Image 1 (cartoon, rainbow, N blue to C red):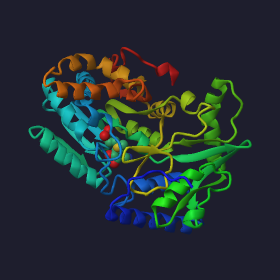
Image 2 (cartoon, rainbow, N blue to C red):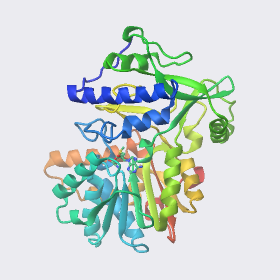
Image 3 (spheres, rainbow, N blue to C red):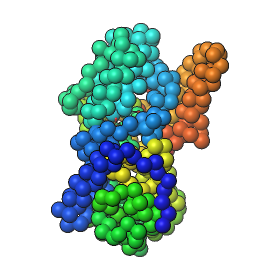
Image 4 (cartoon, rainbow, N blue to C red):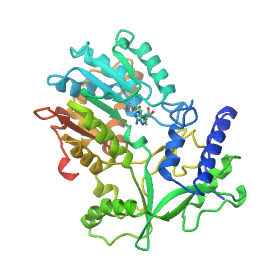
Length: 421
Ligand SMILES: C[S@@+](CC[C@H](N)C(=O)[O-])C[C@H]1O[C@@H](n2cnc3c(N)ncnc32)[C@H](O)[C@@H]1O
């Protein structure tokens, strides 16, 4: 049995994780032994008080499980401020940030917008997690005490949005369904209970993830979960086949066999919902992912589900439910389609590096003081992570939509890959 080398959580965290595992296990039993992966992911991330985002996990930064662009460099938010400032020439100076994490992006944006002459901007945050709301408040009071009063937290979606909608790494955190193609058939991959003993933990028939099951078994004394597949219902099968048909034809390959991936319908639905409420304004979404042609390329056989626990990236979603982050890459073609379904104009699609260059990253970088040298090095290295092709620069993409916005968005002037969606 191969076990992942996981740092062991403290007893309180472990107890919370076991409580969540019991709750999910109960749901699986009540549902007759199987729940969809989207239901598992929903509970693991958002179960009130116990899910990864709704519970007490540190999440972001060095002491957490992963870092996001606003945590890496304040120049990320400063660059986005330039894009917002351009849009504010046509729409009310109001930002709606969805999933604001630690609040770092809000603090950086407010600071830079004030510098650019938009000190009066209204900032609204829609955040599912109560724990993160508190953290956002603290960050804003510490980093931008003079501007913190501009921020309001909304308990529900605004009925109408006029202004700019922003979300960084929101869509990848939305629950997705998982599937496998095998022998010409489409199976939905869901979650069942692994009733075997810890030492004899075995994968489900046809499941290639023995090491993943073993890893989760080794860490938990509570219920253990395992992948279980069943034939997809007609509607899910049709959606999967339709989503994959284009990429497979484009690659000139046969329909793949033993191929797994995910379908993030909730991310699409979110864009439709946000788009319908956007009366006048723009929406900028940044996340990691690809156009469908690349995401569902026949050679990407293992899907994109990723789990993060204390900066260890791995593929076992069943380890320590509620204590690790689960994500799937974003299918930007389906996101573009969702925007079109909501009647929005596509304003651009490009890599994070190209977006930041277009929004004045180099000019801002040149303003970082050379002394103290250690600070200069740290700050420039953070920027390098944002733009390096080997790190976030190419994997992360930005997509923008608008309603009632004329002219080109400056972030997409240098490079616009919309034609590849
Ligand atoms: C991966 S984190 C990214 C946080 C932050 N944007 C950053 O870049 O550091 C995902 C965030 O989205 C929030 N979230 C997930 N689904 C949401 C939804 N439907 N509405 C609002 N926030 C949501 C989570 O609570 C969390 O704050």
